[in-house]
Image 1: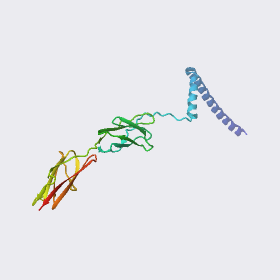
Image 2: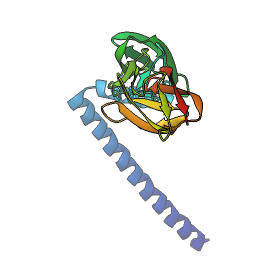
Image 3: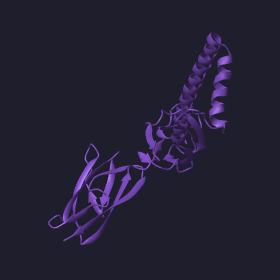
Image 4: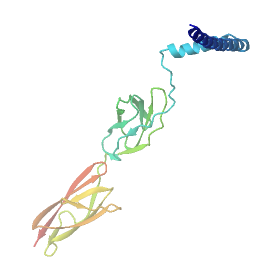
Length: 240
């Protein structure tokens, strides 16, 4: 019984030491809390409690301010020249952004799809047409303008002037191969009797063709960069 009593006494001493340490810690914390209130006021406890409660209990999302502007819209490649006054401006911008397209200062708006695509229709004027696009995201940030695109509306057909031979001219003997020479008023794709003919930088051209016996009808066709075309012909005769 004496051994068991001594064992219990040691346990009691250990527990007493733990109790004294705990009491010391609680006393120190209490003194620290009193000093905190004394120097900073009781409001700090309320603020701290509210802060912790807000962090732990609030389900509201944290507000994030978007101040990054979207990238400028990208326009699909446009023809430099066209003979169609109606044009569709197609491109890609940030999904859901408000896209503003300006053609010669005339503006139209549309909202980009969830894939970012957009399309707006305009009517061109004769000559140069400047096309610019800009986007504004849902946070109100505005992009830089896209690089200006210039489209030239040209509805006039090219002109062909034939210098030689003369229409209705007659050739004979060794003149079976003749030269056709002339000029256009602009850069064109030229075909004479179905054969492509080079047009120089000063718009002049020259080629040779071989005649057949009798009447020869020689067609000429010119197509400019806008797609306008001109067709003409000359007639010459050949007698052996």
